[in-house]
Length: 252
Image 1: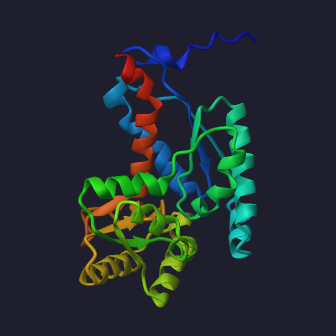
Image 2 (image 1 turned 180 degrees about the vertical axis):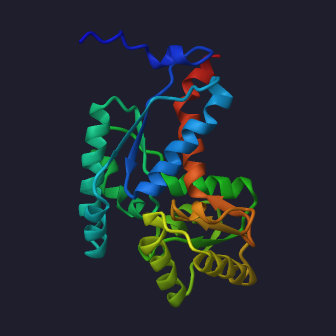
């Protein structure tokens, strides 16, 4: 069978200059899918009808990540991420994103050996928090994430406080995320718990809430959250899109 000649991605977009290929290192399916869909749905407003950058996506079984996280073995988590990075580099990606907040705790084990540069999800969220004038951000996510320094470190650079849930709240969050949201299960009772938790954190002095699990935007948004949301999934997708077309814009 003879295939038609491949059309370079740069000719698919209006304007001039290259459009970088985005590599997505997937962890959980729902978060990766939401990030992918966001890039594809928002790109046409910039690049033209039906147009988005080339995107390569690779994901190992979520079970591999969970096993390493349960063992508190961030080096093993980083090793899995690097294996994905190598595959995406071979597929033609120019840079990498990971729509999973939790495993960013392993990024120090990844970047020195990575074949490609990464955008850091917490840096993207922290920069948006700074632009929005946030001073004290509530953090929602897996227990692995909220017990880590991923967001406290990123926020502290900008002088923003990070407020974690209480211990029993972390347990409930973990159950909702790992037993429901990553399996595409959404219940009214769990959403009610999340909105009540955000309301409590508002009472603790928070002025925004970080949706630090990439599945949380499936059930939380500015429409039902008592605090303004920092949607890590969509913020990362937007940052990846900007980075993918940055050279093109510079040459327009």
